[in-house]
Length: 469
Image 1 (cartoon, rainbow, N blue to C red):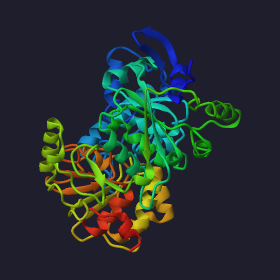
Image 2 (image 1 turned 90 degrees about the vertical axis):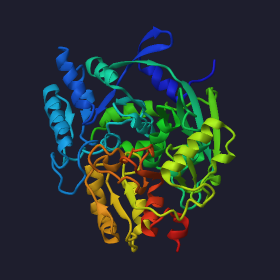
Image 3 (image 1 turned 60 degrees about the horizontal axis):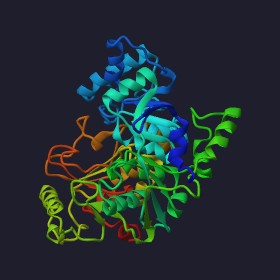
Image 4 (image 1 turned 180 degrees about the vertical axis):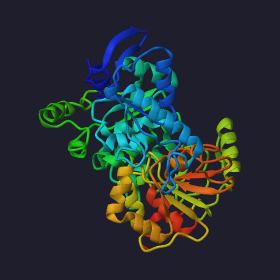
């Protein structure tokens, strides 16, 4: 019998009951909620005469619907105010810990979980948001859930799940200049496809992952869902333990020693068998940018807009043609140099302190192009405070960026913050679907460094050329 994978070890440790047919009842260690799904879920408990099973394992924060305008309050976005008041009311009624506006712990739910020490190796974590896979960067088994599943977790602290297949993607070698974790994952998705991980839990391994910081690993895992896999994971190591140590909700004293001993067992055994394996040569990856309306439509920033005519598959050829028409791009032309209108640095993918540092290193001493409106939106109140303590806000403001409050902002356009129809935006977010950043918005996904370089150049830019210019 082969050894267990990292995923198997955590999954098996949380099985409450085998329900047959490949389904099990899993115990859930952390339930994170935001302002869109949380209020309705908790209200649903009351309507059914149920109580919240484990309020001490449930945490909430407003992020999706709140405005990020400086000096914002609950009603800066009027619709968001309704959601926020409902979240406050339901959290108080059910004894849920709420991280409210202006408080450390408020922010994008997938940013505050790790920074507060709520997300820990070996835990099962769920949230009513598909990018919950982000927490796998901290070696948690984390995935998004729907509204009925959300209610089930609130009432029982368990969830019925079918065990997925296992897949490993090994990133061999070291990235070149200007290549960030975002570039690695965009390159992977473009090669394997948006359904390349469907039905699988993906473990990321290899030399590039081992040398990657924890926040970069979160970026990588964040886009697992864009590969079609709702779970992405990286095995813990000393850098993981150093990241967790001393955080607000992390274990301390003897509990830390016990946790650390367990965490050190969380790795895939040498003889573990995966259902699928892929290896990617990191040295072959250049900074990436998407050209279409799916994260799989990516190309090296020094490459050309693909020509659908070269695609043999008729269905894919048609999809590519539609994407190019929506994006207003011409096949065969260089993607670099395409004029842009907006730049957005933020989202649960790339709004952490290391992301802001990477962008600030590019813009320091430079100015945003006069035809570009550029925003920086910290992922949490704590990130905002830490960045301001380092003077990063001044770097961005002096360059002509707008410095905002914490929240999801233009990633999801649920808060009144949108890209206008027909405008082109280089964004560090995770989705470039039709209308994702607003009706008619044209979104190009990229790393923080590439987004920053593009803001300065006024067009999609190769950061490798700007950085050392």
